[in-house]
Length: 71
Image (cartoon, rainbow, N blue to C red):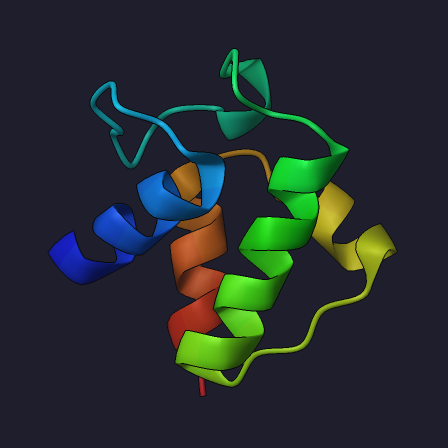
């Protein structure tokens, strides 16, 4: 989980602490570029592909983590 948080923070270029319960869309760094970076990280590091419509349903960092690690 720590590795995921580090990768998520890197994708967002976020220096502040990330908590699993955070609603990531409320981060100041969240943008369409951040979205693309997170999707690329999910694909590269977790071999997880996700459609935009499905990603929009995710609200928290925890939800993104669960989407990456369910198999």
